[in-house]
Length: 117
Image 1 (spheres, one colour):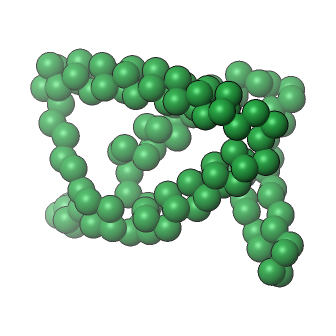
Image 2 (spheres, rainbow, N blue to C red):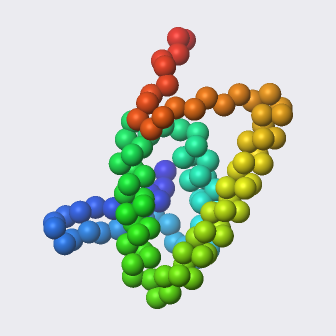
């Protein structure tokens, strides 16, 4: 198991970030993880705490943009990159549906029914 990102608050103004990853040694891992993150976000429930997790992810993104050297350029990059990923995920979903895969959607915080074994 790898620690992708852990965010800990030790005090009011003491927030620390921890990770086991070394992006400097393998920059391609970011692209690989981005796809894995997107897949996880559409295929799993996180114990009913989706709203909180998404709020924290967005909070980190907003903070990153706030301290970015060129915020408009970064927003454009994020828009382009997320658009391309969204398109490829939609194409993959359509291909899977043509092959007979059925999708069930649950609202945030809703757990799927327990399956009998």
